[in-house]
Amino acid sequence: ELFEYQRTVPKSWLDYNGHMNDGQYSRAFSDAGLVWLAYLGLSESKVKELSYTIFTLENHIVYLNEVFAGEEITIKVRIHDYDEKRMHAFMTLYNPKDEKCATYEVMYMGMDTKAGRPGPFPEKFEQAVKEYYESQDNSGKPAEMGRTIGIRRK
Image 1 (spheres, one colour):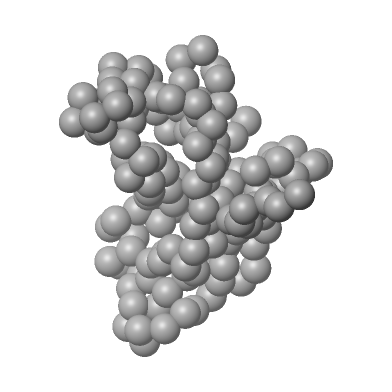
Image 2 (cartoon, rainbow, N blue to C red; image 1 turned 30 degrees about the vertical axis):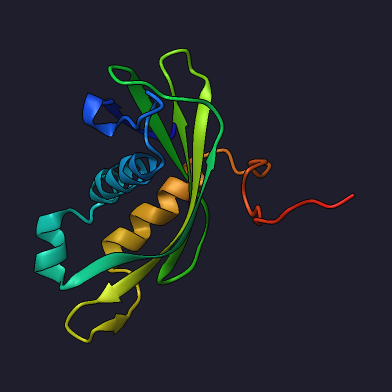
């Protein structure tokens, strides 16, 4: 089973159209990522203890369905690929009807905060990443992954 992050959408996340503002999707995915990283062993206290953290290098959100205030959203996280200091993750946001509402593709980079530069994952965290990757279904690639932005011309 993939890690799941859940929360209720507050009214303050709505825009003038009455649905979740696009910037709040980023917030929801970012929050889910932080909780997931803590689940893998890189909590705020471990970040301080190890002088090691994770930075976001790049991300891409695809909006598929509207989300409204009061709805319980669920974000599921999978690892698409990883190496000794980077993770290519993919998250999917679902509404209470289990409909896919948005996806988030992100490249994370491990950072040695003492050196101020990228560094390899701490051993226990690296092992947790490996185990998580190996425990998930790695067949296939989500349709929304690797998309580019552009106007399709006929």
